[in-house]
Image (cartoon, rainbow, N blue to C red; front, side):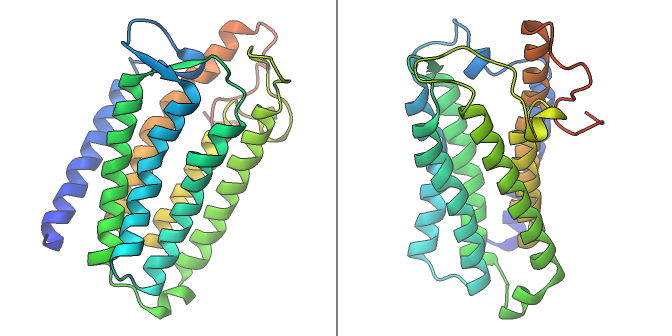
Length: 249
């Protein structure tokens, strides 16, 4: 595939991300606290998470092991895989969601989304990337890695807070407290946005930027929906708390 053709594919996929963002202003994805009947067959929530996230891990792993990559491209691949190792195998085993279900339609759409995004990024890193050893001393690596690690820490710490809300056997929802939850309803989503923004800065290419757009297209509406859900279900919910960005959104 030529570089020009690949760039066109990325731009088309980015346009789909924008369209998805608009659609999600009107459609609330029915999983987690927003689950509802009428979306067809359902499977275990934990199994759904594993199936949804696995393509992002396995596709990048395939390109990493099968095709020669530069040291810098391999470094980016490893960062990607570390994130999705947690999302695919560790996070689903930690969440306390016994008995909760997820529509197969949501799982299938997420698998497709992750296959395309991981495929574009893996292909670029293996066949089109033009990185050199000097890139390890570049401004975008240093700043991007700091941003990536900051986002990862926010994401992991926020996940820990949410998982810790439920005692063994509990399934209900509570108002999260502490850390960035004092400022926003979804610091876990904020951390992931920061993380992939840092990755796009390090990678400095079209597929990584497109993936960041897709992350925003999914997580911004999701955060707004979570925030409204909290306000609807908890009259005492902190009125000054924002959805995603402290003091802004």
